[in-house]
Length: 456
Ligand code: BGC
Image 1 (cartoon, protein in one colour):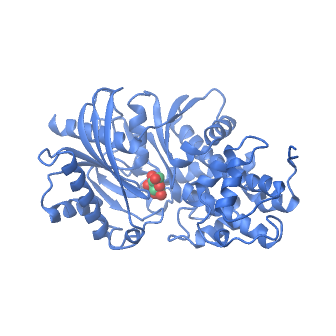
Image 2 (tube, protein in one colour):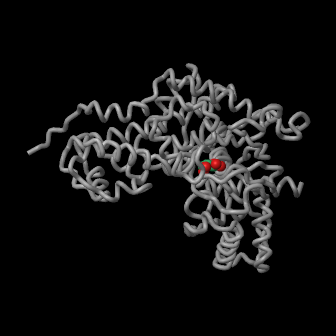
Image 3 (cartoon, helix red, strand yellow):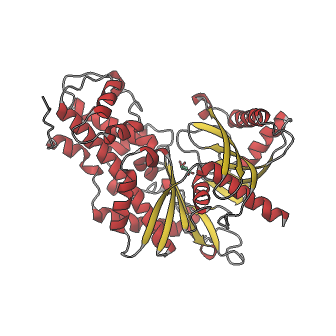
């Protein structure tokens, strides 16, 4: 007997998620507002009060495709920390050896010294395992938090994001903290030649093969983008008027967009509830509407609300669903991967949440809620990308993208294509390219360029 799948959505469910359904007008307004904020971030006069900081990356050259050699890379920014050995053999042959280390949750909020000692210990262990102790290889440090850079090897942490809140790091030069931890060990020869954001690594690694790549985007635990700006517009770079190089990669740090209230018109009561339970309330407003750390929690809050009103999973009790952060963002991908009429992914999630879920209508509703949250994420991300493309004023561009949401969500790529096409001026050609380990490869490419320019 085949099940008849209801296609209509109950008015109460529709009402609960109506705020996530952005209209074309709202999206155009988001682009306009973001354009203003980006200009404020770039300009010397307004930078200090701007929310989208548009940090200077000190990376002015895109890869030539001829970079070669062995480099170490560190990747800190999500729940795992990675050490990599990247061998750039040719632009089609890159060998990567890497190891992930789990960061204990206590370390995320403990003393910064412990975090950097942990990083140095992992690095030492990795070098020992691969017999690299005597080599003093150049190292690129992908550090995926807002950094006020003062050079390629100097970056002051402005604020933690994504659940990190280690003490004694904000306001400090992160490269120095790592160097001190390495020196405390005394048994490692390491040459830190660059610190970079993951978006910059992603842009560099895509540009290594795709010549027209001008934007690096991350939609993972957090969200952010970087882009290629004219050096003369990067007013916070001391050499913006005199530099012989025409371009500067700008780390937009777009996650903070809306921290001054300009996005309130697209936020829902659920966004405000999520914000309250984060370690950084009032901060990273745009990121909290978009990225993987928060999407699952948004869905959970809608569910809890509708369950309390007796509109979904009626009569069922689940402690798991009542517990904060218990609805993983990967569940959205699982549920939305089901083909029409199939509920395998959905059933698995329902089961993991400790619900029975015998009612097909509940499953249809659950999917509808997930789709509302993920579509809004993709719509806002499209607004961000369109803002950057318009700002660069170019007719053809490739965007390098990384992050678990983009990688694993079944429709994210298509949603970005759809909404960007609707928002961009006609005739602008764009391509969205999935980056393959941008944090590692990008760090190696920047390290290669840095080493070249110091040995010239
Ligand atoms: C950080 C960015 C980073 C992004 C993606 C955000 O929380 O502020 O620096 O690029 O996450 O990892």
